[in-house]
Image (cartoon, rainbow, N blue to C red; front, side, top):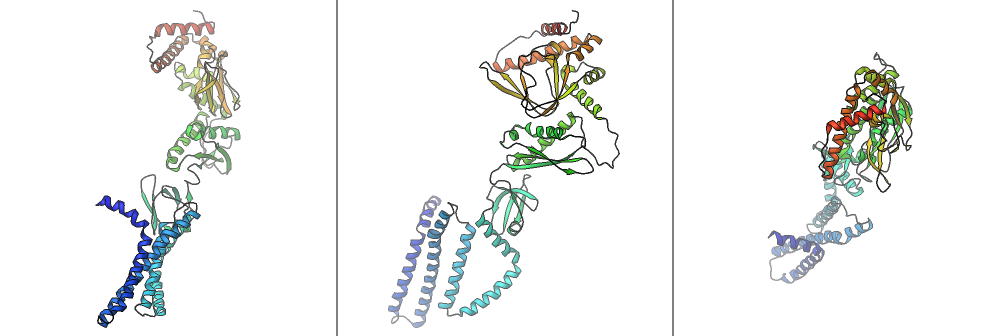
Length: 482
């Protein structure tokens, strides 16, 4: 039964106008035939029959007009609008107006009611009802306007009345939104039509988001750009967009300089998680730069000097590296004091694969790209270095050639620690070489095991032999007695 209905429904819709026209013709024919029955029927019965046929004729006419509009008018309007179908709410409104007009004509022509009196009575009644239901009527016509203009569609993410959600339904009275917390929000059509709202899904799902924050007055323009821009470029999904992030200075207040970070987000649904990732990177970049988020100047604080902040940041980064876990706080402080900082210009390599080296680097601010040369001679990017990371330890301790090419993706602040600083520590504590050799051997063994697992090769690693070999390379590089 249901399958038959599904088959017949499209057929009835296509044949709606011819069937309605046929119904009108049949009723008109019956009314003409009823004149021949005048001599055979009682006058009262004949009048009732005539009235019923007249009502049937008007109903068939209304059906025919609505089917003609649906079959001929609306498709023509849709073609002129580039194939966009006419909103269902507008079509229903026209259908109601047709039936209302025919009802007035039926009352006047068939039941001989005064059209003027009917219009006057209807006007008063509509006025009373309209005053009582003015909000509903406003929402109804606002819904019609929204259906015609189509500023949003089902599935779009919009923000109205400071509430953002996905459009899941729209009817004659309201629009239903679903927020990222799966909470249903009902917004009357009148509110949407009267307010300025944002559509995050048009003209496409990518839109520009912004983060505002205050940084201390002593942060330079270039330093602020490195800290904020690298927070976005460290997220591959955001860095892949062809329009790059940007920063501007929005003003000043009692805390410091007000910065705006502008970046392109792929869609509103994931905005919360992406903002969290960007904020996390900003906080980490500030921490690695030795900076703190400013507080109002009315609040009294004892702050370390800029030099002390930089040294503390370098010590923290050295302490996070497993290679320097054997160093004491005093030794880490000596390394930090001998370090030198400089700005690495975007696109200009810091290290070249295969060149000799005798220092390590720390990335304080910015972003670095790591690439290696393949057998074909092409450079392939294999990773990125974010603020707080150390690279080049092997060259510092053994003089090994650089294993990769490192190029700044942004103007970056780097710290370099040379061989002389490490040699001073080894002279003061020669047994440190044994600890360093054991740590380096363990790291090399872990790297070899990981590569063997990826290639399904089985390798046996001699930890003691690797440690002795690494110790020999360290003693040789620093001219230490064996």
